[in-house]
Length: 186
Image (cartoon, rainbow, N blue to C red):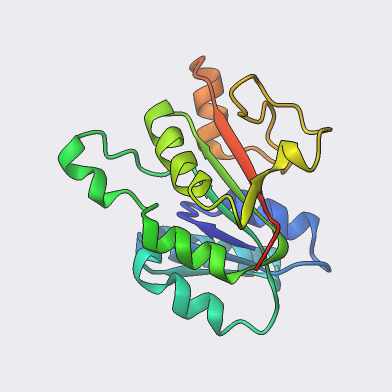
């Protein structure tokens, strides 16, 4: 699993701890101080299946995941920096080249989990992934047990572990927009 924009890394560490024998976790975070702290915590916890790299995912995602010997089964992009001003939208982490790289490297049956508490950002991310319907489908079309609202937003966090931003947003009374995609074709 790769978490793009892993922040402090707590979400990824909880997943790694819960699934210590079944999956490897990589957090990509552009801020070096957060990566240093996350690496300290995973060493302190003795987690051998989680690692963090300080990098710009837009530049390095393809190179990093293409060298990993196992399948890429899950990519998450959770509450990325919204860059509200239109002239700064180009700074948003999710752009077409990154989406293409994610889709092309994701294993058959792999999933993409996106989440934001900012509707404009959530719609932007959704539009990028909806643009590849020949390779990805929304999870509710293959798993109707995952409850969604009328617009296709997943109602509950399917990972079972909430991010710090998610907890904060819910405390503030903000809606969380989630979408999960499954890769159906190479």
